Structures are given as C-alpha cells and as structure tokens.
Image 1 (spheres, one colour):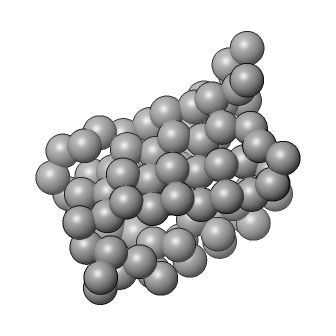
Image 2: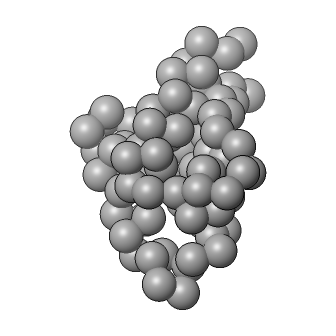
Length: 85
C-alpha cells in the first residue's frame, strides 16, 4: 500500500498522512476543530481537487496550523505517497 507522511505534531503545524483507498476519506483530529473543522476540510478538499487526486484517505493531526501549512503538508505527503512502493 502506498503511503505518504509530512509535517509534525508541533504547535502550529500538522501531521498529514495520505494512503491509497477505494474511496476518498478525510479524517481530521484538530485542537481547534470546534472553530475551524469546516475550513480545514475545505482546504483539504480544494487541494485534492486542484491536484486531481481521488481514492485516498487523508488523516490530519492538526495542532493549530494555518491554511497554507495544511496545504503544503498535504501536497508533500501526496508526492511522497506517489514515490513510495
């Protein structure tokens, strides 16, 4: 199974794991979910759409990362997944 990981669990960052899947699934665990869950999910969905990526499971462990950090971690994790065996 292909998998890609990027980021960390440090404050103001996020750890993003992307795995091949039969459907697209987004799992978000965030310390700010009560306020920003919908925004985090929208960033992930928009990024997947921009990259034409489907059928992956995205797991985000967020520690208060800003949108551009979430997006860059997701892009990096996808690139790493594509390179993995």
